[in-house]
Length: 479
Image (cartoon, one colour):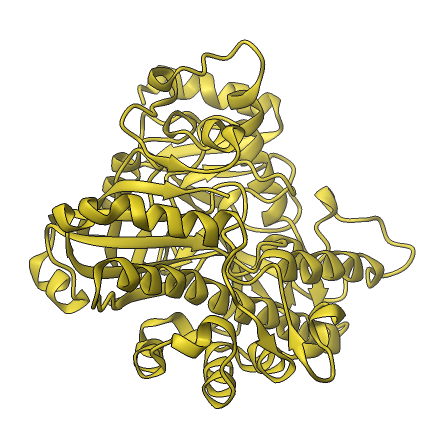
């Protein structure tokens, strides 16, 4: 961005109460009269627009503190940075000391990505595509999947995530689990972040999912969810780091599938409960914090901090199992159509989650861990490429990376009357989107999103990630 444009931008932001500077692709922002918190850093390509609402949300998050102990120690945002509906900007990475902020994670706890490769070529896949789509349409969109659980497997799921669930299901398989390859699923645990098992407890889960005995038919497990969540079949278009690609087990020309989903109604249940509980725990007689972002103080209420982290882990466990089931549905249907298909897991990682870091915590909202040597998955839109990358453990950006391209236009703007909804204007030419809802196809069209390539290039230049493989979408399922 040219200096004159920057000066005009800074003046406009100052009128909004923001102190902003820009150097080497990074904006530094804070409230002009702040009394708490650090400056926040936002990594953005130079020609990307700066969204004032998102900057305000970031500046508000930086100032969150608890009067009885607890503060934000560092804050940054990834290049897919944009405003969030709940007052926390998507792409935020916040480090805290002596406190956690339930609202910074929100309700879509452990929304995350999962990537599998297959030994199918594109031609092989296209030959059976229509049959596969007909089967998956029923599973993903019409509810024909059978993910029946036992009371014991649900308890194990919430308490111990994938590890506990696999043990319980192997002992007493139900539904689609009767045909699962348990040996393969267990071998893949080391390719799931935290082995897909966090320290949760079933007491935080919706009571309807926890009968004392019998079967549980949960309408949330094995579902994609709305918004930008998806199941997508892709082809590996280009290898960008052949050695790393070999380690990941990914080859050019092979068909792959990618999943973006989270904790569904369980995350909503737990997230809402803890936003209200954090508000109720705020010291009586004191003014509410800006934007009603209520932290929980380790010094003031350590038992609430421990309970919240356990509750968040409970929803995270559900999300790990949900993504695994979505992948297993795809894997089983592929074997039904194409015969023996290995479809090994590359990696599964979270976006919205709080994790210990140093002597405090790190909360990522629409951003993912990118520790040194860790696989990172960054999707584009359903009309643009997605990427497998390797994390570089950037200290400046707290070993984090973006979780996608980021929205350029709101869902309201995409769906409003008078907007050009032709396939050409929406970027949908050549895109195969399987959905029951035409509005989903419009709201999530490629033109709603920022271009993915500058997002990747900027993070690579900043030492956050190293690209390994580029994947092109073939077809996308949107609920």
